[in-house]
Amino acid sequence: MKEKCLIDTSILLKVILEGEIDVLGKLSEYSLHISFNVLEETSFKIIISSVLETLNLERCNFYKIKKEFEKGRGKELVVKRLHLLNVIKDKLIVLELNEAIFGASKEIIKRYCLLPNDAIIAATCKSHGIKKIASFDSDFKRVDFLEILPQ
Image (cartoon, rainbow, N blue to C red; front, side):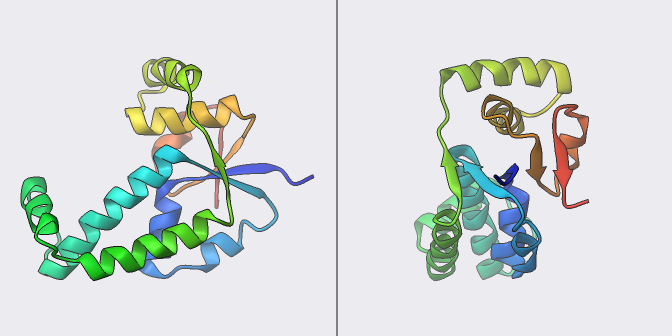
């Protein structure tokens, strides 16, 4: 039986936005999992990056990005990238979130000084017995029950 590994947003963005498909290939020895909040965060960042790319900007006020997105700016790019996210998702095991995971995330916030979304990801790992996380987010280095991949 393969060891479990949770895929973080940063890995998905590397694949979807930068075309670094080999990042996932390097994880083929693991049973790959993902949580709904990782899918939501990835979708959000796909929208932000697609609108910024269409506007030819590196940064912008969030409300301007939202307004431009609502006008349809970057829509084709968003649709294409969200489709790719769904293709990837279909190859992973999607983990449910629940009240116990949310409760545990509050303790993880206090102990490891993680932001809420990262704390929910860590709590999801702990709840499902996952000891490895594929991420480029160095914040997870503070979590003593997780090993970060790739190294």
